[in-house]
Length: 163
Image (cartoon, rainbow, N blue to C red; front, side, top):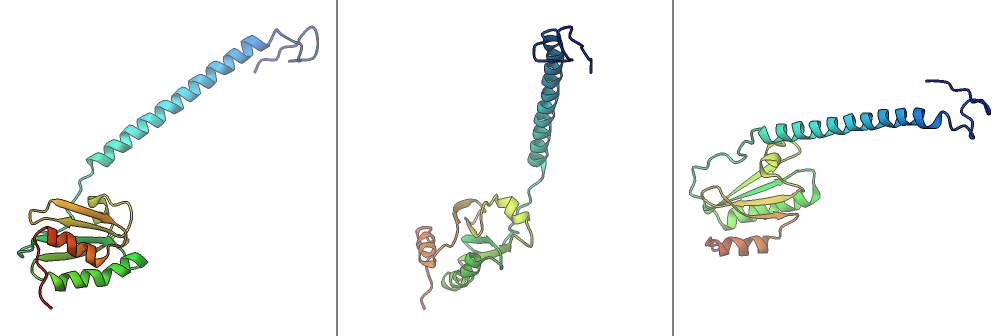
């Protein structure tokens, strides 16, 4: 850094006007260049990272089903999550109530995160319903009461078995 001794006082004194413009202008230019480079680096990293994320192959989480199920019910949760554990009896009841018409699949997303990525879940538990062709027709986040799921399935043409 340059030192300027002012004729009117000590170096870089408050009253000195000789040094202020040139030194500060150089510093300002350096700061602008620095922040410009940082900004470009952040933008370049963001674009590259986004490109990597988009090019990552997403595997289909549900394997093909040889049964005649009209609906596949996918529960994405964890055995360590309280609302997810509350869904376990609901899934069992659905399997019994709509036997042969529904396929129930559970994925513990804390053990295997591939299904979570494949279905783009935000919270657990998340329920995803697929038709017989594998297309999603309904999604729900959080605990899903049995009676509401039964209404949804009956609206899709499934008939509950007699007790």
